[in-house]
Amino acid sequence: MATVVAFHAHPDDEVLLTGGTIARLAAAGHRVVLVVACDGDMWAGPYRGRRLAELRASAAILGAAKTVHLGYADSGHGPVLFADPPGRTRFARADIEEATERLAALLMEEHADLLLSYDPNGGYGHRDHVRVHAVGARAAALTGVRVVEATVPRELVVRFARPLLLLRLLTRHRVDEMRGYGMPWSVITHRVDVRRQAAQKRAALAAHRTQVSGTGRAARLFRVLLKLPLPVFRIICGTEWFAEPGGRTGGLVTRDQPARP
Image (cartoon, rainbow, N blue to C red; front, side, top):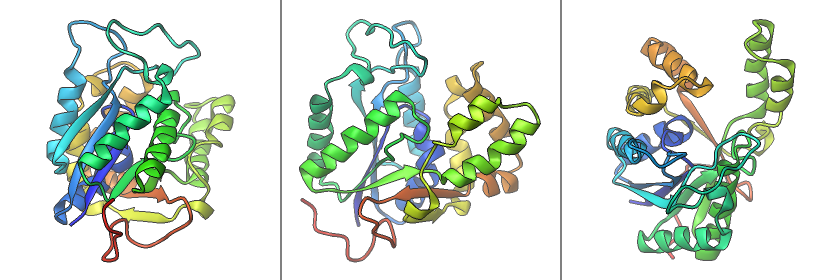
């Protein structure tokens, strides 16, 4: 059985991008270690630590064996990168070599066979997601661990954006921006069917109560997804995509898995 390290930017990212894959790997007997770069808290305050607790609840639902926080604070998605909160460094401002060393040390400690990371765009351009790609790629190169990058098909994103534009739920500027999300079909190497894991994936999403109860666009999306009947949720969220540098195809974890470093 393999050890898989799933490296994400924030609590809740693990569900939307790789939740079904984590659940499927865990059900097959593989050990999954879930790592987040950021704690999910933009500021110090009375709720600090809540989102990491929600991450642990989500991980338990998905079957991950362990959760790890790499030690950084969220950087936010707006044009302004705010000052670091007390005692923490925002991930986008962190020294990339230091972050790489932290992740590489974890990969070696866990004897990782596979690292799940992000595509070069970080999916949708969030500065923390882009930094996850950079750190993940460097750590994989440093340790020799195979890396596969979570993504979404760019053509599929554009296809879904068009009706939202017609319904005036998106602006033309936003649709143009979304044309750069994800990766083209031509470079996607792994398409994972996670329809059987849909109930786990939805329950894990619900575990992120702070996000679900929020007022932002992501919170509204989460609430819509959670209200969907399971068969509809299974159709919408029943596939997860990955691109492996070098173009290798096949299973994420196979019988010819290379020896651990």
